Image (cartoon, rainbow, N blue to C red; front, side, top):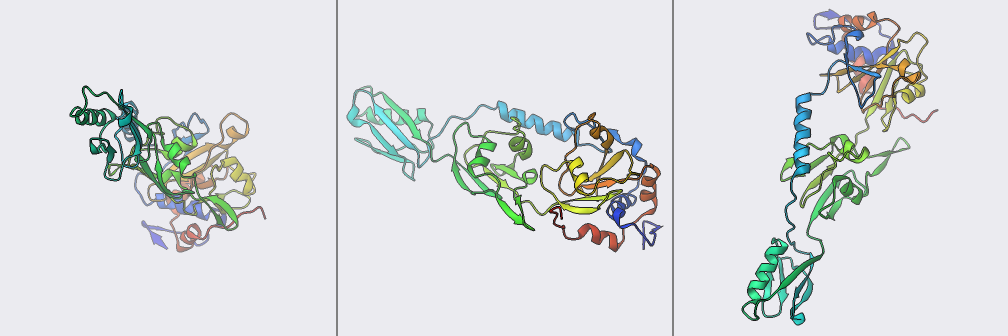
Length: 360
């Protein structure tokens, strides 16, 4: 088979097939992946010194995202406005007979002696008080009115998607993203090949406000408790919990049992290598993780020996990662890039169904 002007060898070791495809595709893009592993850039993943990366996150985009969330955090919260369904108490000092405790009707009004229906919906507490005092001034001298919201039902958030109990939930002024997620019961569960898995894909979940998607990282907010991403929820916010597809991690190269494994977070590199029969004796001291697809991939060089000796932290994998264990030579990388091109056989390997793993 011919592509990019090069010929593909007739035989390919099955254990290296997935890695060959990933690296070979890179050879079709000039200027990318044309050097060996040693030229990868240093990359610090939450202080993890085990990882080296060829390309990094767009620092400018991340800076703008953080600035936006910081401005959101420091933003003064708007005053509460009375909503239909709220339970409120209205007291007129010195005139107990005029007081009332009631729910705001769907049209935003409450009934009072002398005044009949008073519209309070959409008004702040102060605005509602002033309107009532103005109306009562026609019947009593210098009325002093107090308005208290006893129960908030009109401030709601919608949580939908892969959560246990999607629906409309009441919120308070202190409700944050993780709180709303918990109100909806957290992630829903489902069976896949006899294995119970979380259905939620937090990485691709969305928080929509006023028709705009906020740059919130659900994983940081919910799994790691990051206060910056755990933003305050406002009335009419829409939270969509994306549904996880049957994502996989492909493990190939100098490994006892090359395979495609169902992704289940948290999925550590060392544990995954162990579950796949561990690395052959002739493996290189570093493992390569290929991430973000094959069209525009990132390559991470991981110091496995450093992790095993306790010098480095373990690395956690993401859905659709390709873990490639090279032989103990750098030249193998250049062979892949310069001489290997995808074939239908390799593409089928990567697109094949995920095999269930139960330790059998």
